[in-house]
Length: 85
Ligand SMILES: [Zn+2]
Image (cartoon, rainbow, N blue to C red; front, side):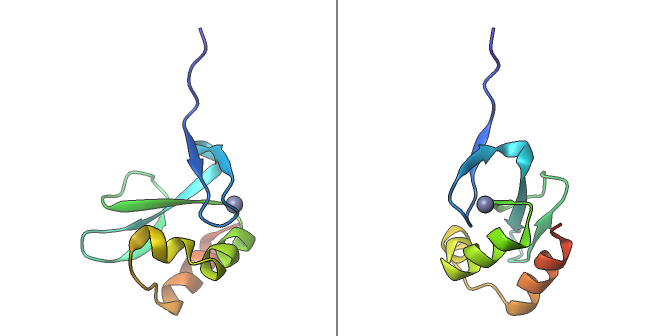
């Protein structure tokens, strides 16, 4: 029996990857956007590779804005970038 591996699309490079290889960025019901290190935070989630390069791509291609249907403040992006390895 093969177990189905959950796949998610990175909003930066747009590649499908295993969920465990991606990090989740979440927009909470209170409209806070942050890196969801637990993977269980409430709200709308977007997935991204665990590197700053894909975050930069996601900013450039507006992938995050599209996922969250809102603008993302620059300081929020900076915080997320700092947390990405
Ligand atoms: Zn990526």
